[in-house]
Amino acid sequence: MKEEIETYVTQHKLYEEGFTEEFLDEALSKVQQRMFGDWPLFGAKEAYGDHDAKTTQYIFGQIFGRPGLDLKTRGLMVLSCLCILQREGVMRIWTNACLNLGWTEAQIKEMGMLLAHAGGFPTSRGAVVVFDDVFEQRRANPGAKWAGA
Image 1 (cartoon, rainbow, N blue to C red):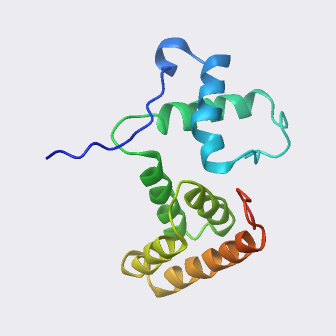
Image 2 (image 1 turned 60 degrees about the horizontal axis):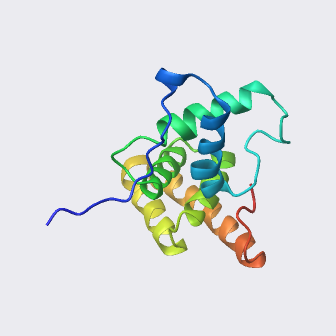
Image 3 (image 1 turned 90 degrees about the vertical axis):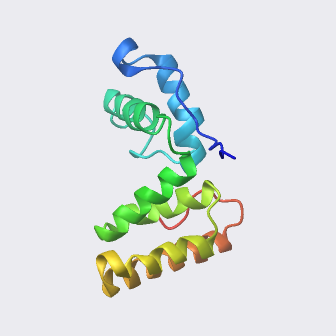
């Protein structure tokens, strides 16, 4: 029996329509806000003007809106890559995103432990320390979509 993966596939295509307000609204509501809540990725709303809108449409509309992988899996894949690259500041952001997408603390920590095989023990340990800090801050703030970032 073939398992169907719930994926979100954008209704808009950048290569056909270009950057539109409708595409931006879809990328924000269907992907970015689901992952990060109302937290503005680039600082205060409109802080970088057109750059924010185009980046959101491209990354969260076109790339994350592709078929083949569900959004939850994509989030964990990004987090695992950031951990290997030791990008601590962004790891915090994506740890929150993974929690928002439905990964449990235990599942995220398990991924962090697995990193030891690809990135070495110090990389794995550093990731788990970051995860624990985010988890602790989220527990202190029930209902928060992001903390410690």
